[in-house]
Every structure is written in structure tokens, then in C-alpha cells.
Amino acid sequence: MAEKKKEIAGFVKLQIKGGQANPAPPVGPALGQRGINIMEFCKAFNDKTKTLAGKPVPVKITVYKDKKFDFEIKSPPASFFIKEAAKLKGGSKEPGRNIVASISLKQAKEIAEKKMKDLNAHDIDEAVKIISGSARSMGIEVKD
Image 1 (spheres, rainbow, N blue to C red):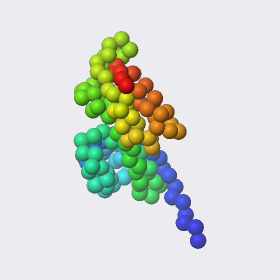
Image 2: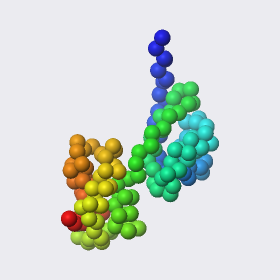
Image 3: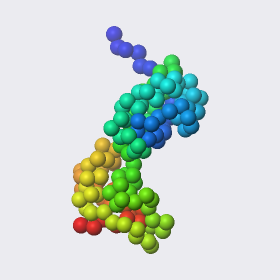
Image 4: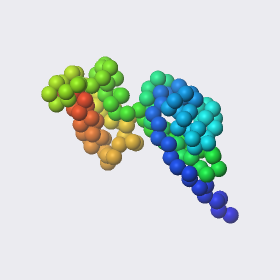
């Protein structure tokens, strides 16, 4: 017999530092209003993201009518990897006019490889173009 599909009550999208989910805002209020067991989520999330400790991790939580949940972890945002590669705390205040740093094409390709599954690209060259565009919009140039 086919398993009855769970009814989805909604989705919650959050960005939490890897291994550091706790009931404090934004996690607690976002999940509490949906009736999710917050500690259960925090434990599961922290377990799955130990390797990404301290990095911002986007997570999409699917909430079901019976208050159960599933979650899908995405890779940290491209901007995080770009800033990491350029050894910067933040991007340019005036991207396009003011270039604050540069990353190599090789670094852009490494970022593209890490982000590939979350990017809307067919191959690595397209992914590198997406990452390069993100870097440019942060005032960081990509040099080959």
C-alpha cells in the first residue's frame, strides 16, 4: 500500500550559522509559531552542520500538518565564499565604481564547484560566470 503523503503546512526559510542553531530569535519565533519542537530542530540542524561551524547556512524547513518537519540544507551563500576568498569582511560600499579586492579565476571556479548544486547552471563554466557576477556586484573583480 502506498504511504499516505504528509500534508504540508508551510515552509520556513532561515539562515543560521552552522552548528549554532538555538531557540533564540530568529529560530525560536519562526518555528514556535508553526508549532515545531524547537529543540528537536536545533539538535538535528546542529548535528548536520557540524562541518560548517560558524558559516552562514541557508536552510529550508518543510512543516507538516502533524507538526513534524523535514529540512534541507543549502550551501553557504556565494557572497560568503567570495568574501572568504578575498579575505574581506564585507563587499564594496559602491560596487561598480569602487573595487575593494580581487579573487582569481581559480578561486571563482572553486566557489562555483562548492555552489554547483544550488546554482541554476548547466556546467561549471556557467557557474563560474554566475559567481563572477556575484563578485562584481560586491565590488570584487575576478582576475585570470
